[in-house]
Length: 163
Image 1 (tube, rainbow, N blue to C red):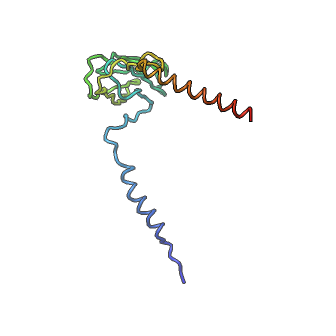
Image 2 (cartoon, one colour):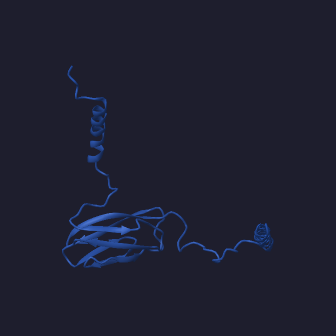
Image 3 (cartoon, one colour):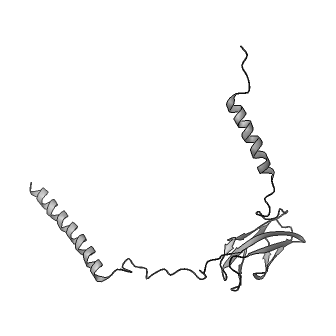
């Protein structure tokens, strides 16, 4: 009897490959930065108004890459080094802005999103100790529990030593 080459697992594999191929070839509709002969990035891609972004570019044949966006001052990256830029305090939360990298006339762009939250300059970190937020009664109960455990341990160890 002749055996068929089209097994169920082979058929499922082919169906999976054929359905995945169009998605792999589809355009990303602007979610990725432009494809250029040089690499570039903005980090982080989402920042609060007044926040700092790190700009980088590499493989540009000229010594400087200019970076421009409507939400921070124009910046130049020298010989592959990174630079930072401070986003304007009045940048609109929730908006997206185009960041343009220019390497000897070749232009690449990516998007920078302004965070919609109200956090601008960090978070309240507390006083740094483990007693923050506890009142004297809670501290006394905790101390009594620790003392009780230590006392019970000493009692049990002494009793065991005399046996």
